[in-house]
Length: 144
Image 1 (cartoon, rainbow, N blue to C red):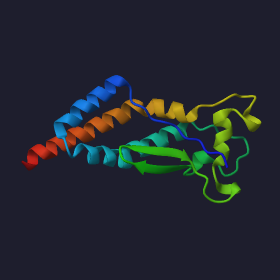
Image 2: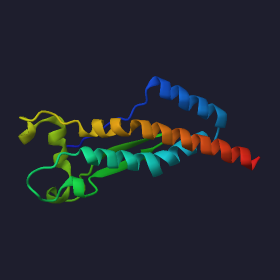
Image 3: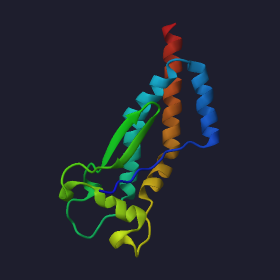
């Protein structure tokens, strides 16, 4: 069954901001970022993408009303993709077709709902990561 995934990439200036904050922390930065990605950023990204999901006319089991996504966490990253769990009737494989503009969606063209959802949440994600790093700096300072 078809799967869709979207990369979340930081622009150069935001990388520099994060790099500066990371250099102030040292060892604890990695765990602070991983925790933020898992508990905050990935959830906000999923909600943002859900707002951009196209709604079909069928009125059946629809992604917008369910947990349509799966999250996989890695070191300093996560992957958000459409869920393929379960049988055809209750999986969300069909999101591939409007995303790529294939199948019965070919007349409408591709709908980059994942990219649009990530773009709309981008600034919040960077802010959350910077806040998590700043919080870690404050904790380290208070601990010493």
